[in-house]
Image 1 (tube, helix red, strand yellow):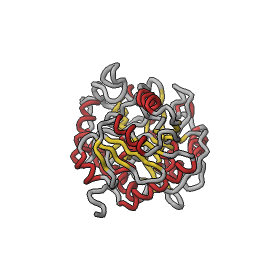
Image 2: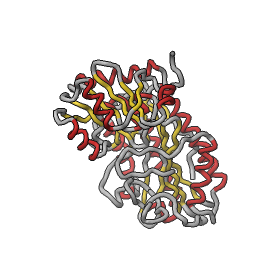
Image 3: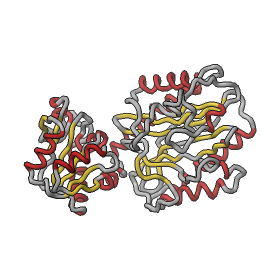
Image 4: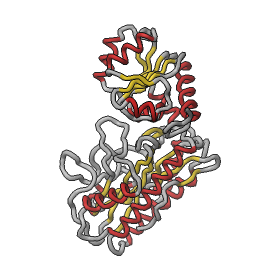
Amino acid sequence: MEDRNLIFSTKEFGARLAYLKEEMKRNNIEIGLILHHVNLYYFSGISLHSALIVPLGTDPILLVQINLERAKRESWVTNVSPSRGFSSLIDVIKKLNLDKGNIGLEMDIIPAGLLLKLQQKLPDAFFVDLAPVIFKLRIIKSHLEVEFIKKAAEISARSFEHCKNILDEGMSEIELQAEIVKKQYYDGAEGVPYLRDWNQEGGHGVFASGENTCEISGYWMCETGKGLSPAFPYGPSERKIKKGDLVCINKGVVYKGYHCDEARTFVVGAPTQKQIECYDYVQKALDLLIKTVKPGIKISELYLVANRYMSETPYHKYFMTKAFYDYEFIGHGLGLELNEPPLLTPGNNTPLQPGMVLALEPKIIIPGWGGIDIEDTVVVTEDGCEVLTLSAYGL
């Protein structure tokens, strides 16, 4: 029964599994446990409450705690069984006689309590990190994955166009967010973007105006906005937008689990000369980055190219977060999560490869004045890159 209700073809799922097993074998991992819902979706086709067991020598086993019948319809995995939870996971590992081997886990994201329980129940096993292997595969997107990101970018572009039509003085940042998010949902967006890192909540993005466009809070090194309260110290606030304000919107859109990331900066009314000047510098830095992206270029070169250009302007000390923190970056990878590898820093010498999807986000943030942020999502092609985000530039 080929491709029942599958999000990807059995051929694509099979290739992912084959690669995973090849890397497991290379790293002496005898069994892999896929527990994080994003990786479950990537390898099994579902994001239900379940666990995917990948033995090196046999077919994968999908243990499902909730909605077994849906899992059977939507997963490409043929061995789908009901689960009682943790005890079922341990039972299967022991029945496979793999309770004394090397077991791969998503160490970057698995709860410490769960790891301790596994160590207690499987005292003779040795637990190793499977996350680098998974990201090594996920970092290169297939044609269909890129198509899903393109669809997310189309939804994003329509919401930015809607923003230009409704943005006006007197509305609050949170009101603007509500209108934009509603537009995204009407156009097919699928919920709140996923963030990989622990203790982060992405919400629906950054909607900041005026002095809030130079606010850096929460866990992100960008204009984050002030937020509604100390409980959520980032994102839109109740501040009323004024004439002459810069308005920065930086948000992800999700479609079929895949993200695009886009930022644009607007001004309410006629822009000042300084606003125009800062915007032009950021725009030229982004243009330079896009021209630089191509296979074989080291990731570190992206930051260095933009930083060299900005060093020739009057605003170098305000480039990225230089005025606040001594942390150098120019963007990040994205796909099933909004902030996945590779991180685009001057210390990352990984060469770019076709199929990598990157968010390029140069910015100027001036304390007490405001910030300019322009971000595009691009995919590395055989001879350069394709810009996937579609919104027009300009204040």
